[in-house]
Length: 284
Length: 272
Image (cartoon, rainbow over all chains, first blue to last red; front, side):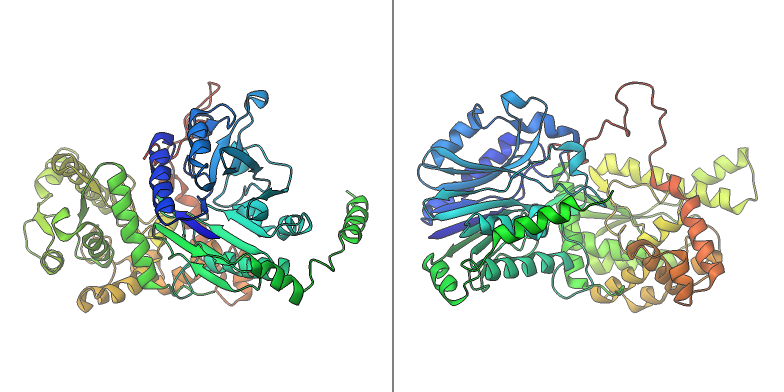
C-alpha cells in the first residue's frame, strides 16, 4: 500500500481555501498513485478556531464539500479533519476526522481527549467524543486517533483490542521546548509514542501532523510512519510544509505478530475486570 | 533543564514567523526601531533573513542631533545587513511638548521619548506599508521593563519568548558584531542608564530565576531551597505582578451577554 501524508498549513477559518489545498494534495497523491492520503487534524478549518468553530462546522451527511470529497474518494482513500455538527445534534461541535473510501464515509472519529490546560483550550469550544472504534477498510482494520488522544495510551490499547492493524493519528501539534538539538522537545514525545505503540501493538502507526503558524503557535510537522516492528519507515521534516509518500508492506503485520504475540496474549477480559474494580473503588 | 537553545532551529522558527505573519496580513515589508543595542540588532538580523534586506526598514530615532555611538552602531548594522535605514531626531517633537509641560522627572521624559518613537514607527508603518516588528524580549516583558504604548507597542513581537540570555545566544549564532554583543543593555531613557543598574541585578541572575519560576513553574520555596536569595526572588515576583497590565489589553466591565475579551474570542490570524 502506498500512503501519502499531506503536512499542510490550513488557512484559519477559511474552508474554501482549504478545500483547494486539499484538492492540490489529492491531485498530487493520485499522480503518485497513492492508495491512501491523510490530512492533519482540522485540516479543513485550521486549528485555533475559538469562536469560529460554529461557522466552520459541517454536517458530513449534508455538506456539499463532503459530497465532493466522497466523489474524490472513488480514486483514493482519504482521511481529513473537520468540525462536525450533525443536524440531529445542533450546537454540538466535534473535533472530528473522517475516513472516506469508494464514495462513502467509512468511519468518523470524534476527538475524546480535548486538551484544556496551558496553551490549549479545546474543551471550551468542542464537545467531546465518547468512543474508540476500529473499522474495516480495504487495507485492514484501522483505528483513528486525533492528536492528544494518542498521548493517552489507553486509547491505543482500545484500538489494539479492537483489532487495529493500522493506527492513523491526525494531529495539529504545536512544538515547544528548544533545549535539545534539531527540533522541538515535544516532537520527540510523539516519536517515542509512535515507536512504542507500533511495536507493542504490532501495527502500523501513521502520524500526520501539520505545519505553519497560527497566532504565534508553531506547528511542528515531523509526520511519520512506524512499521509493526517499531521501525521508523519515513519522516517528514519539522516545521516545513511537506508531502510524504511511503510504500508500506501490510504483510509485516502478520510477520510481527508471529514474532511477538502481544495480540494473541492480550487479556482484555482481565483488563476490563481490573478496570471495573479500580473505578468501583474510587472513594470520592 | 537549561536555558541554552538550539539557535539554528530557533532562527528558522522566528524567520518563518516573521515571514508568514506578515504575508497573512498582506505585507511584504517590516519596519523596526534600531537603537544600536542588542535586541533591535538581533531583530534586524532575523527580519533581513526572513524578508530580504530590501524589505526591512530600520528607523534610528535618537534624541538630539548628535551622531553618538549608538546611532553609529545602528547605522553600521543597517549597512552590514544592507537594509534600508533612516535617522530621525525626535528632540524637536519631545522638546516642544516639555516646553509647555516641563519636568525634570527622567522617567516621564524617557517614557515620552519611547512613545514618540512608537508614534513615528506607526506613521512610517502606514507610509511604507510595512508592519512593525517589536523588539521586546521575554525578560523585559515579564518584569515590565518597557514603556506601555512605547517600545512595548508593535504589530508582531518575534523575540517575545526569548530571555535576554537567549537573545545573546542568538546574537552569537547570527554573528552580530562583537561590539554590540558586549554592550551594556540600556533602555536609553537617560544618559548613563543601564538595565542591570536600574533593575538591581544582572540579566544572568534575573533570567535564571525567571526561567525557574515561569518556564519550570517552580515555587518561591523551591527556588530558595536551590540557593537563590529570598530578597531577589521576591523582588522579581513583585515586578512580574506589578507589570501584568503591560501584558494585557485594558479590562472591560462585562455588561452585555457577549463581551470583547471575555467571551468574544477570535484568533488573531482569523481567516488568514
